[in-house]
Image (cartoon, rainbow, N blue to C red):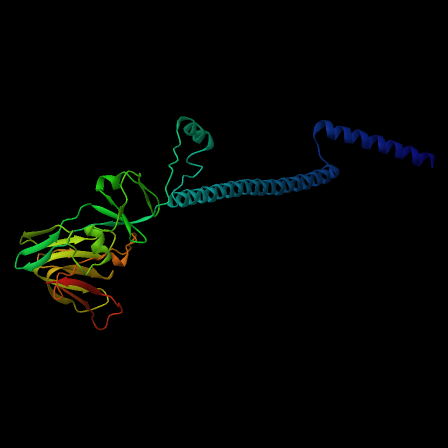
Length: 326
């Protein structure tokens, strides 16, 4: 045994010296090769882990950037929706005749209020219906016509038709206009209906009063005057051929008229005259016109001839109507 232990210690010393020599001189044995293989495997594993982590970090960075872009897009969409609603509010305010707060803020409004003076008119409770007086020539014979000379451009009549006010075009232009009313200064006289030519014709259109100023004129010119806010025309002519064309009717209608009268057209029709004048109705009528505004005084029982023209295959009940006088 002592010999064996001594040989073992010598062998360990020799191995240690050999190991040191291998390390010093760079010689590799089996153990070094095994360690090298283990280190290579660990290195490759670390490389794979690094690549995997790099891919994961890249995906995370892309997701963060995508979320930022989505958040920015949502913010832009919210701002666009808000601006769209603001624009709709501005348009609705303009339609209803007001100013939106985004166009005129409170500070600007306060400055305007400080510089402006508000005048509130005192309005009387007199209510009148305004009529425009249009002298309508009545044909007597050939080119001779008679016409009533009006005393005023406009006549405002109360609902009882007992009182009226005469107004000129200049006075009407000075009135304040609201949605459906005119507010005028009370500088005109209010007359009783008795004795007025216009009011007498207004109340009794079948009688020509003595108070009217009747004039006789001679001319040979066709007159077509559109009544404001309506699809009606006053006409004065000797002989005129009128051709009516409608969208819902394949064939046109030709009618010869003469004298003085009122021509009304349906919104889907138009009329042509001999001199290629085209009468085109409006699709939308904004004015409120009362039906009893057509006053043509009867000079005799045979002066006025009223008739309705109707065409088969049409869906309109009042395609064309005329009030004609010979």
